[in-house]
Image (tube, rainbow, N blue to C red):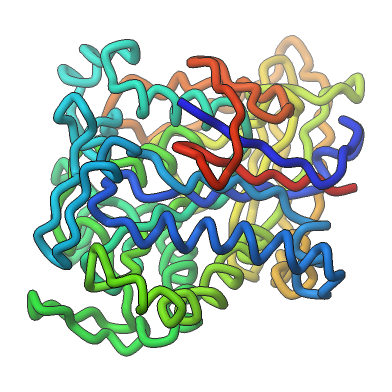
Length: 404
């Protein structure tokens, strides 16, 4: 696999927790090629705007780290036909649909117990390694063949997550907001217009499972295991639009892409410190009323991020050997200020005879052993090794901006 990683400015570890990060993923089924074009154009637009000192770009890039992956399935892109609806290119060289190849939170204990990461496709292993290399907060995965913003869950096992035909996450309010931000900033998505298949979507959004069930998708994997809220953006009825339509399609999607990226500044961010003032890894940071399948935990630098809409939220922080800490925070709207609320949690050492609180992990499977192995350097993924080339040539590309 190939990776380009561009850094606009460097920063020290001491200030890392004072900024957010954002991932935008390219199409993982590359018979749907418009996403690649849009993301390459987005890279060009961001760089041009920053060079020209345009306020919109300077503010965004000085507050946000952005990784862009224009193509996840280069085999599919090379094999893609030009028919709008029935073009080939869904599968990689091994004949595997990559968006059905990720671990699935609803697959059941037996199947999850048999999951061996080394048996997954190389592209999927690369993405999993990428997710472990950075604490991603927000993600978009671009597809084609419809005009709608789809949000998790994509699958279900018939449990409490099923509500009215949808498979609903504990962060459903945030996901609906994210989907609407894209659809209402898009040129026409919010109207819910149907493509030739006759389907229409209120406000131009849908719950993934309510649309159709999907097992092994990247969207659910990002949310459950990587603590990253991902939305799937179906950006065109035509999977391979004619080149003369590309300028108009970019115009339709440009402001939606930028508005979506700004949503990474929703909620609250900070670090968790132990009784000695040292940032701690794997401290559990729970929000009352949001029982996630896998609990949100701090990364190796003690950092946590929670995307939340404005309001009052009660946080419970737990870490071995320390007292349970409960605090209520008033969370403002952050995107307009290009910063989420910054709040650190300071823990106290527990007495030997103190009562310990055990976090509640709503887990249909026993596989919530995800470890955030953040190195914080461009391209520092666990496996496999990535090599850099020009984004214009790239099978893979990433754009990363670091700020003070």
